[in-house]
Image (cartoon, rainbow, N blue to C red; front, side, top):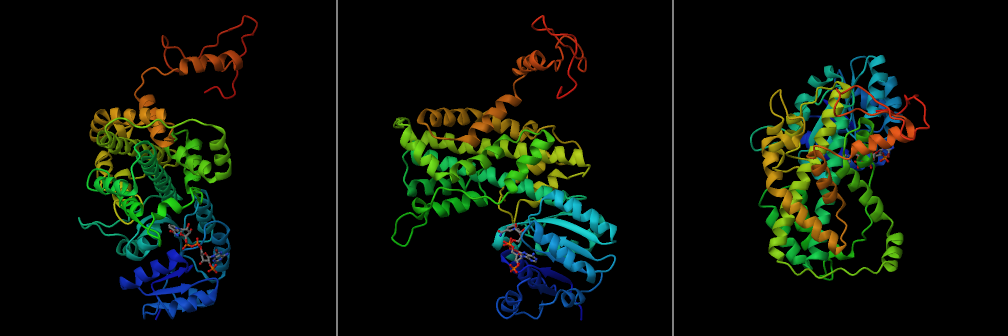
Length: 482
Ligand code: NBP
């Protein structure tokens, strides 16, 4: 008897996804480059009559019902290309390869085009939720060959996180690399959420002088309100976790952040599309700055700037901090969904933003109750040009921006870095400023480069050049003019 689906790659994600699929009644063939891991798995955690291990790629492929579904849960990059090459000799037209790793969407576009030439189907899918999500139900974001969706719809839907309202956290994203693009933006938003929470933690610790127990209580309290989310939940747990000697473990963890690249890719995509993504960019740079601990130690020993003691009302400031965090988070998602809107238009993907918000409500790292408000903002055919213009978000920012200012003013005076909170307010104030100083910027560009400018007293699209010094000619630049 042939099996329903094959999974290649038995590391953290692959193993748990296999167990998840088998628990839903699907029969799964498994393969791993290092055969000993396959054997260990099928004789250990994966000992189950629904799970069948193979040590040869040909046998693995032959074990599957046609059209074959083969899902790769491999390290992103070259391993994916290498494994596809190894599979090709054994595949037949109509078979489907699925990449469930964190691949770059450009690679997914390329692989899909190459496999289409050979009559094969390809899906690039985001799978979010880490080890636990893969086992119990991740958020799944597939995109690629539209004809392939019916082949995996039931398996993916059954395997993904299920919500209380009966919906599942999986939906078709669109053609080409749309699934991996959406997952990439999910990860970028995750970077922003994490840094915002870290800034709130540092504010409590270094400005308000709170101990771990009080910090834990604050996060636990926030978990009961608008900020309710997986990341706040685990932060509350982390802040109360004790090391073996009874001291807070958090104090012993080195403050040098790692990253695997999806945050950087998101920022690159935003730069390519000309979309402001300042908060997520700052979160990537904050990780970069943190990782150079030697340089920071040197600078800390060089600059002697005392932190003034906080003499205000701690509870009032904590209320402001919670509101500021929520407002900054809204602004981060506004920027993230702005990038999704731009990509959808640029690549003609027809992304469904309400559906994206809904499938992120469960299973994934950024899951939160707040995503319901985003789904509501993007419901229907007409959605706001900018998420902050949706009534719920306009109202929340109208009421909450003063808290963001209060927290930033206090943090700046205390010398505490709040890069993501700062970026959020700068974006908000920029967005709502009718007349920015870009008139001066355009004048500067025209002055030194004859790049021309439009005038407020003439229709858009008419371009003017001024001979600012009296020595320049009439020639204007065609390069970089807009
Ligand atoms: P890893 O990203 O650590 O990849 C390990 C797997 O890739 C192993 O099965 C390894 O086989 C296989 N592999 C490598 Br490395 N080179 C190979 C090659 N040339 N040919 C065939 N197989 C090769 O595993 P993971 O952490 O489970 O993540 C899998 C994917 O899911 C990644 O793209 C990751 O970014 C993504 N993801 C991970 C998480 C998470 O929380 N870990 C969350 C969401 C998404 P071997 O055993 O022979 O070395």
